[in-house]
Length: 294
Image 1 (cartoon, rainbow, N blue to C red):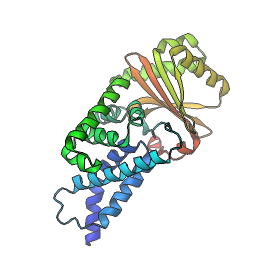
Image 2 (image 1 turned 30 degrees about the vertical axis):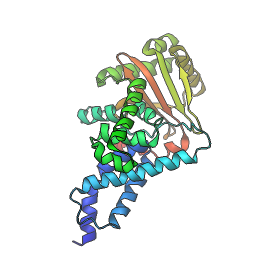
Image 3 (image 1 turned 180 degrees about the vertical axis):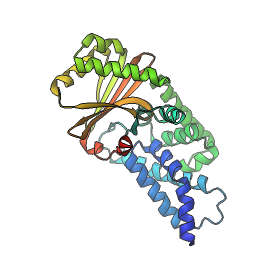
Image 4 (image 1 turned 90 degrees about the vertical axis):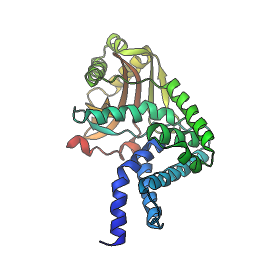
């Protein structure tokens, strides 16, 4: 085995972790893969013979890459708020590996990623590395050119934002299914009252159809009316399938075998508190649906 082969094998052992860090930092599966690839290129050009903890070294490298990407993304914006939904992770709705799905829903749910998009790059990095991956502030501080105390403050500020704007999803998968099924059954049948009954009074719907901003609708009656409007517009054209979206029960819609939308549902108790709909055709084409056919 050559030195390059040995180094590549060591890197592959850390790839899944690095991709998890990058996805939470960037909210984009494509950009996460790019960040991981850049980390490999930097590793391949660096003498790491004196690195005792390669995993920690690689986490630092991918974090720096992601920080640069976030800052570049911010500097390219022509307006202060360029809003979009994160890329969803779509899996079959099965009861296999419930612990993994519960962890995924808690740590990288769509609702949480939406909030992370509102943080500045340094806040996001400090929160993701410390609160999601347990990286000490002493190791985070050099990445963002801050003191450990300043890094702690950034994570605390981000944590307050997250806690103030997100609600913990219903952990019972069976209850999630019942609520989501009831919503889509009511939408399919055109039952306005049944739709309102399954929606939280303060429900928020965010729809990303491409472009610069999210379409946002507030309130049960408004969201129900929106669902009925789209039912009339696409009656009989779409096939709905229940899936897991970032670990929680959601739906995808297909037309002629092509993915048309992904709906992430945040269920709290027996109501839907948030709906996040991605229908940007260009981004949908890049999603991996291979697991659904397994």
